[in-house]
Amino acid sequence: MRSHLLLIALLGLPLTVMPQSTDWEEFAPKEGHFKVMLPARHAELPPLLHAVGKIPNPTFLAKRNDEGFRVSYYCFSEGSTDLEVIQTRLQGARNRTIVALTFESRALKVKHENHVNQHGIPGLEINMDSRATSYTARIFVSEKCVFLLLVSTKIERSISEDGKRFLDSFELLP
Image 1 (spheres, rainbow, N blue to C red):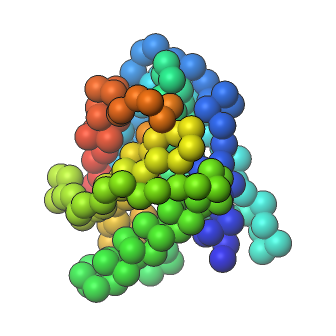
Image 2 (cartoon, helix red, strand yellow; image 1 turned 180 degrees about the vertical axis):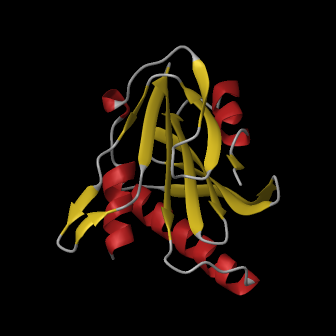
């Protein structure tokens, strides 16, 4: 339930609250153990406050032209290399992402989804449309963490080269 509320809060942010940027930089948060190309002017959301306390789910937002870029992650207390556990975590993250975006838009349609493997990291790409916004999400699962990359754009536009650059740049760090 906590992760569901967290995703609703994070995915429901309008593009207007994201900083606008023209330059790109390699971004690697101190404790995230990953890197990604992100528009240079980006913002970090504060931890979500919940009845149980702060929920650690670092989320970074940026905007370039009419596209929004979001990257977030959360880690489990126990790591696992078990393929079944990793697949369960991936499906759980997929379901929470779709529920959160459906809650935001009230009318979300999943157009396409397929398994991806980027730099040896198992993941899932999901393309979705709401009334006014198209989303492309990539979700990756490592031994201990789940990573969500999301590009949002106006419904009449397909994902740009910038959006592809952002999604394709994700890489785990040692």
